[in-house]
Image (cartoon, rainbow, N blue to C red; front, top):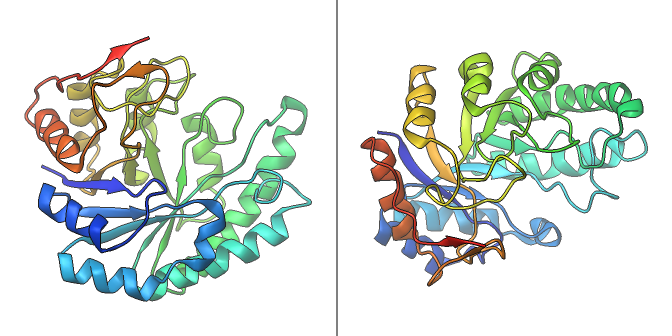
Length: 275
């Protein structure tokens, strides 16, 4: 079985959050907060809390919003974005976080500008890979939905070609023009972290597995078969989005139960009704 992880998804990263993770059996944490709060995070305190509660600081999600300010693929924004993300990467690396998740673009990205924006994204990713390497970290490029760069395995592999040190964050609810299984088949050996959530194959939904249409036993088996041994890391909030109705908010224990069902080859138990 893989280690069970959970993104903070904008929650206050304090002692109570770490305590709730440990009590439920969550083993790994991804740091992800509101865009404006990244510069204020007390990384040394977060490291101390992680050590106190026995939680692995698995990954750090570099900010990607607002789109009109942060975007490595836009010529007018790439220099500022590289500088800002480099500063955050160094802070994360200094406390031992060794996986830095990055979005290769914002959106929309029109067909006419796609090649140019891929060029700038590749240049920026190569730069950030070098920065991360200096603190023992690896940049993990996330697959993205809709018109974003990295919307299929072909584009992800093009982005990774910018630097041999780049790897992949596999988001299971972002692929709209390619199946998850085909994506794993083509880039599985490059995946070093995950964002686990469910969807309807129409658009990203960030539902709990079992609430959407992903066939989880097949996906898990394919990921293991590709050699993945990292964290099974959920990326969704406790509150239900408007597209489904949950009788209550999720808790960390729900994620652990969900993961153990998937690891056992059992269809995860849904607790919602789709609207």
